[in-house]
Image (cartoon, rainbow, N blue to C red; front, side):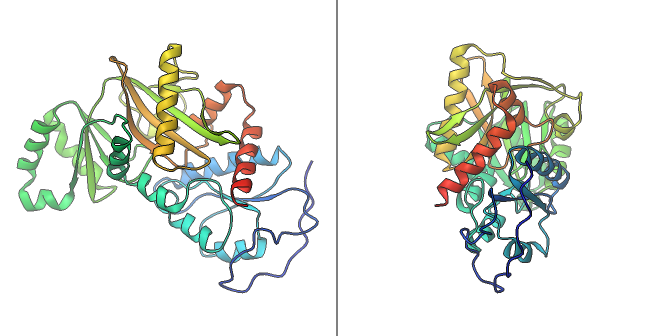
Length: 341
């Protein structure tokens, strides 16, 4: 059933905090604003995620408005006065905590992790340090700024990387997602190009040991009883799980649930929940990991704004769990509303 349009209200004064309780008395269900788009490299993925989530929430009877992140946003939020905002923004601003800082400043509840924890997760070396402190495994790594290659000379630094990390290794930007700027290096002669491609997406590179094993994504959803892991999704991609493998149909094979023993499934679920808690995440997250032959789950990275496209991993995990996608998204909205009270 479609909710009636809200009666126009007087816009809040410029700069005034928004009161989450001051919604239209005639509104029959919460008004949700889904933020999608932005100006990051992952804008297209964000728009696709936003449209799909908006459709799913409308199917539960919620009134949902989709809005880009632009100069009109604050005015739009003050005029609309939504009950809750779902930031489905990928890349910079969406995952580095800045938009969440703005939502906190204007006093609006929102789905997802707060700004401080988002900043920790956004920076891969910092989040890796937090995971290690929590007793979780993550591949051995070094962090190198582009300026170091200019100061010390590129070849001596590259030679040192190979002696320290060895082959194969993975080069990735310290910030960002969707595997942009990420290269798996199996030959020493390919390392210079991998560094150049990485620096196209950021000033600092994370170089880590490549772990051989089963690549998995484990999504965590918070309900009334706390965080709970959805079934793991196994990723099988020839040539690596890069941007095309993630978002071009037919490039990658997924198994949901993953082809794991019950003991392995319990292990990776526990690791994802522990990562969620260790990084002080909220409402939902997705942990990407490699389960090696010895049975160790190595956390690669954690996402505070998982993709929600037709090929994304969290929706696949929901389907594997037997839950209805729209109903689960509605649960996430309800959890965000309760935690804001």
